[in-house]
Image 1 (spheres, rainbow, N blue to C red):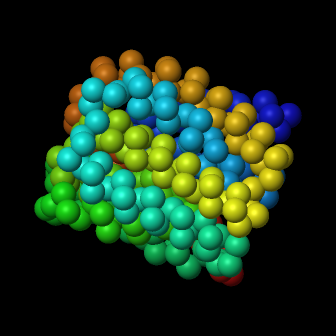
Image 2: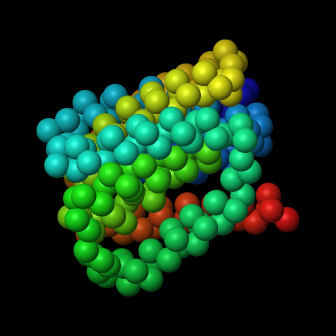
Length: 244
């Protein structure tokens, strides 16, 4: 039943993640935590994302923004390596609370979806952003939606946002998996769980492609805003539960 559930939840999670530019991992945190264990969430999700992201990169390859990648990717790789190392030495509860509050605040930053931008972002910001967000991702397992406000404010939407994040995530996840393996956080069983989740994710990405191409930029922003706020609520709740 665990294998079938992972396949189904992977398809559902990555369908919504593709349509709303991220968040599948965060949506799946409570599912994996209940079915397997909380500490196994980051390595399982990293493997699933590594399996799923090549399909998103391929489907939207012509929409990758290389001006963002050249700043974002180096920081992401460095941060992912350190985050993977710290996973075995750190309790993420406090971090989840802070990230949850930030994501919930995007509802007000974007004036409940009526505003295109809430602050100006320069491309040079993406190196420290990649460093910080991938570092936190290595500890928590899911911080994808944190990049969305910055990418939206830089002017990336729909296919550009999904393609750019997917390429960055693909290489970042590889770094995290390597780090988890070196520091003993990844077993063969967790690898098998992650692969099953990833195969389900590929199915979800395939069905999400047409929907993403068909929706308007305004609706995409609303989807993304809903996902960011929902993810923030999940992170905040999980952090407070762990802390208390």
